[in-house]
Length: 124
Image 1 (cartoon, helix red, strand yellow):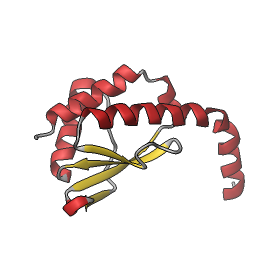
Image 2 (cartoon, one colour):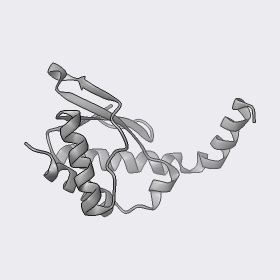
Image 3 (cartoon, helix red, strand yellow):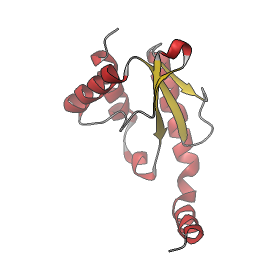
């Protein structure tokens, strides 16, 4: 299938969920970033259903905390880090948080519970 046609089909399939996905990410990003100073988003208030999440720790510590939270809650906070040694003094890593159509059915409690487990597992 040509790329343009594939993009059009994807857009037509999911365009009705863009607003809800954006609002969900705005809500979750505000709650997560307010809960711990080691977490920030760029942009600070997401402008669509995609934002960069910056975490102040090494990639090794972040991945270990992610895996511990996954074992505890069954929810993976992120799949993989996109950048390491970025931000102020090169002390942050980041990942892309994208709210897809399948995440709309997840309750805030489930997602925030996974984040709480992740942050507890992350050394201070």
